[in-house]
Length: 271
Length: 313
Image 1 (cartoon, chains in turn red, orange):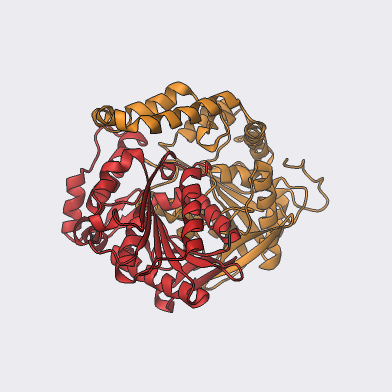
Image 2: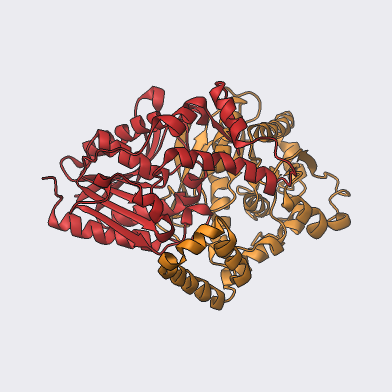
């Protein structure tokens, strides 16, 4: 396992490459957003190590402005994260050559993986409970500040509303969401600019979700949910990204590993 | 410019990052940042990463690391509290030696602060900490209720409340027929956890946390305690761990300094609170820099003539 910095010096990215000799494939992990990146970090790292033990090269990386990568959180934007994912894909491609290269993403990371696959076709895409509608997700993030003020700080009347935060963004100002400085650019990207890609250039797709997310998964464009190389499955795991648990998402991991076994054994369908 | 480092610990390798000061004057002081949970070097809302950066700008070294087999450290480990304590000591020893530091300060958040206290009481002088900055310290074993860690018996009523009353109840009821299988599997998890009882590891964790108060009372080095005034851990500390100064902190020759951050929560989660936290940390470290190493060692009880203190674990 190699911990490293990569990418251009002006946009230095932190990454962890776990590449066994003669890896059968490579996967770039697209991380979730904000606190979900934190809550899931140890468990996704653990799963990455397990995949490496199975002979699959794994690259985990931190988008610019997050984690150990350069920049401040206010530098983070969806467009920037997509550029960083492309950098990570290129880095992995250089390491594994012509072997199949896939993208994995949980929650917001699922959105990143899907967007990236639409721009640069990957050989396969693995999505765990992806955030399908970014604008709704963004509203939920804003509400976490209201909830925190009301619950954790015991404030009777919160000093902000969701709308007043939106007004701040519209006026070109950043908003502090529990220590994360959300920039107007991030607001534009999440609330307006980006939606789930209609096109789907990657033929081998696995979508795992929980039963309570079926309405959201059902709203995915048809090309992402139908076809003989798209696999949709419901797993019984708890929403493990919601807390700092050490409970491993066994259902998600096992279903994915079975799918990878089968897909990589029978050969990636790129026809 | 951060440096990536590998720290040896009982046959494991811990991955760490050291932020190197842009410029340095006076004593070489390093802050060893102990994170609070099973999470990563950079911390919630990137607190640790930003603190390390801020410290380096002010001329201090800062080390952050992942525990054995966790996150970006190689291997996979079923981490115990004893492992975390061993890693904390190994990191302190490594940091002092590898960067030729005159002073190593333990900076910990929540359980990280508890680890810093234990490390400060290590019998090995190379592992001991010359000063402590304890933020939202976890010193009351009674508040370690961690069903999410799989340590504690699950309280069925709380879990039921969580599952059934959280979110849009009407939508949940409407979706109930479709969600039946999922609910049944959840029920299975709850029953298994509930019947598992209290494992030994939780007992060990509670015992480790329970010693934090007495370690703080015995610690003679410079110490800064930081709490957010809205953090329930502050109430736990003042009312259950140290009611009426039971630990005798006020009577100590070198009593801990206190900083309360107004409207601050457990992790200081806003830009303003974070800045106050950093300011309090820097003020304390700047004053340490002006003190002689020998004076610090005397205060902390590191002088060779003195008896080694009791082992932490």
